[in-house]
Length: 82
Image (cartoon, rainbow, N blue to C red; front, side):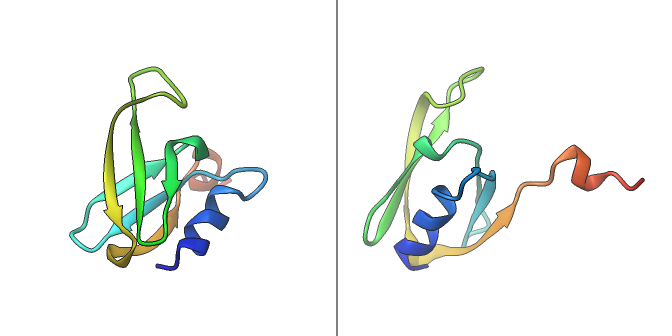
């Protein structure tokens, strides 16, 4: 994935949470844009601490070449048929 695609998703206003899916099937749910740092070839993804929105407990580095797609996070409203 080009770094600009991930950067643009993080800076969409208003921010919309999304999932980063990588080639091994791992998924990272991004609920706050401050927890992702985008580089030219990789992204550092902060794994949030329990009960904290933008404070990470640990982090993982993901090669952008392994990012398969970005998926929207389903909300209760979107998943409910009325």
